Image (cartoon, rainbow, N blue to C red):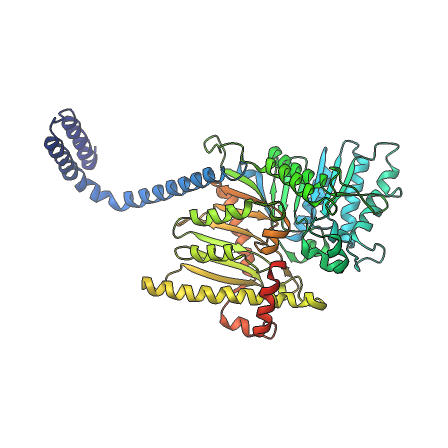
Length: 553
């Protein structure tokens, strides 16, 4: 037996003897505790001093790990008061890396589905890749009489005149021709089977009144509000992304894609959300016309009843249901949230603002938005977080913005976002300088920095949130994926859905780290010189104009 171990045993025995002789007086109790402390110090300090380098390092690693575990447990417990929770295993989550992988995952999901295919996207494009995707849906319907297919898109975007196709005048016309008409290939193979296998729902915002419809051209009507949900379900598999079902998103538009495999309850939850919105949407018929909503409330003629009934249905679905179980074999917890300003539902905004306050000092925070138009509440929260955390914001450079090079007023949109970005950059720089002067540490990494994505031939559409706790080396503990851009539109005008993910699974967190870091490979950190380029100049008049219209961007 080593001398160190003998000393520890002697100290334990001496401690046991003194514990068996308690003193009745207060003074005696104090003396008793002092004697115990002295004896323990004399016995333990010499041997432990010899072992300190190894023990200290091991104890620090264990303590740090336990602290991170408890922080995650606390945040998961707090999240349960905001949204329903679905525990799962990190091994059931897969991160896709490229647009082509996303397209193939959707196709393969449709081909393998036995019971349900549910797709929600702002719109479906009219190019050749989109036709191929619809053909996959048609073949699946023809081969499987039990398969139920639901497509949910936005009515304003889907019926907008399109110049991409020489055959179809709009996305709605293409959907009707390929999937709904009597000449659709899968219908000819049905041999009298029911045609209720397929439903195409087009959501129309009540915010576009008859007067606004008359005043605004077709392309501009979407600024009033759209259904911006993006979710893709194949039986018990869920794919979440910010991507739409369109050629650019399948080829050269950078986005994010997470697959949740064999997660029946989570997939069913998103199915329920899409079915609720679909029930409050118009139905596309075989002639390409819009039929009334199944709930019998017209969004244009009965907006008040429409809003109240829809808000009730969505709120019931997303109401917190149970406390999360953090001890029964699960290492990942996911919380679906929605942001539907027109319905008075601001769940996602509340969660993000709450979480930014819960993150411990030294946390590494990354937020990505392709359209830089953060709300004042988000800007203030991020600047506040930067006092003791590392905050990084990633956005598109003007050339990587989807509106870059567009004709008309939309061509000025990238410059507008750049002006808003410049405003936050200047505020952050001032705050960073003041903060470092107060702590007298010019090397401090706390603060807020902005990065721009720019890749030749590509546009940027990735949106989300990643959080790594202090000292963490296995990747983000928390991430958010979904449709929100964190701007005014997402907060107040559009229908958005996200998923918050809290994980202790090393493999999943490593995937998330690679996903996040890959976005920065084609990015550069912003400095003051960035805003003096020809594609950035705007002047005072342009700055005032941007602030006047930013709630519509």
